[in-house]
Amino acid sequence: MKRPELISRFLIVTGILLAVGAPLFFWARTPLIHARMAEDGGWNPDVIQAEVGEPLHLKITSDDVVHGFAVGQMEMQSVDILPGKVTEVTLNFDKPGIYTFFCTRWCGLNHWRMRGTIEVSGSPLDPEPATVPLYVSLDLDLDAPHDASAVPNGKPSATSGQLLETNLPIDQSAEYYRSHSPYEVFEGLQNTSLTEAQRWDAVAYFWQSNTTPESLANGRQLYAENCAACHGENGAGDGVFADDLAAAGESSLQTMEGAMDMAMQTPVDFTNPQRMLGASPALLQGKILRGGMGTGMPMWGSIFTEDQIWDLIAYIYSFQFEYQH
Ligand code: HEC
Ligand SMILES: [Cu+2]
Image (tube, rainbow, N blue to C red; front, side, top):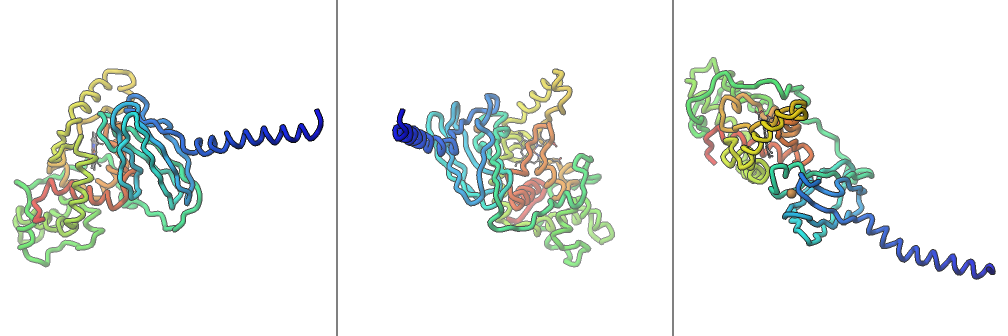
């Protein structure tokens, strides 16, 4: 073989490699993501790499039922993922970190287990200091019992609370509200001339003053989409999946693996005053961020922004109090 021939062959081969390789390279960066119910494997792949400042193009399809796709802690509308169709999504990241993508359609009992991660590398476009969640800085023990030792007869009324004397010994700061349970604030009113019922009404008014109609409305919507299937539309712990969770808990207790795991539990009843009036917003924040560790309560820390979690908490307390708005 003469030299020039060798070179031209080499060039042709490189040409073919480039022609096939370049699309392959880009295709490899945007693999087709398959969605399946969690029992059948969930997302595949479930780990995706991306870079700050570079748009991430995703193509997603479903192999079984209709799922939804959204990424936690990002302002984005969730998109439906239909069986046999390819949905394209483009994401932009301005901060590095590990993001969680998740299913947004209630596709089954294990729906909330349909989660995957996007590992974003690079440096932040707009650096901001990292914040520590309040329950961490308060060093709360999330698993300690927190029942209130006294509860009101009926729902305390914020409207009645507002009519009471105004110079009650309640610290009006947001920090005080977030780090105390309604029961603790009730106790703090012991040395006033108020009756017990009035003290609870004052607490209801204090709770209402620490939220806004917008925050409650936002919390209500997030709750309906993400929590009601277990905790119930009206907070009573009787969502459509509550029985399934209890059954899964019983069967897991009967197996060796189940005995090693913590038992699945029925979802907490948010209308139970003893339980909820004894919990501070910071404690609920910790429980929502961390989840129930094997009990069936998902962890939401990688899904919601801090503000969304406070909105959810404000809404959860509305099962305890009679608000004006
Ligand atoms: C798959 C079912 C399920 C879903 C969905 C769910 N939870 Fe739970 N949740 C549970 C179970 C079970 C418990 C009880 C176990 C525990 O306390 O850890 C619980 C407990 C809690 C607690 C602890 C209350 C306390 O006083 O100890 C809070 C707060 C809570 N959930 C909030 C939420 C919020 C907010 C959402 C929606 C964003 C949500 N949960 C979605 C099942 C669920
Ligand atoms: Cu799904």
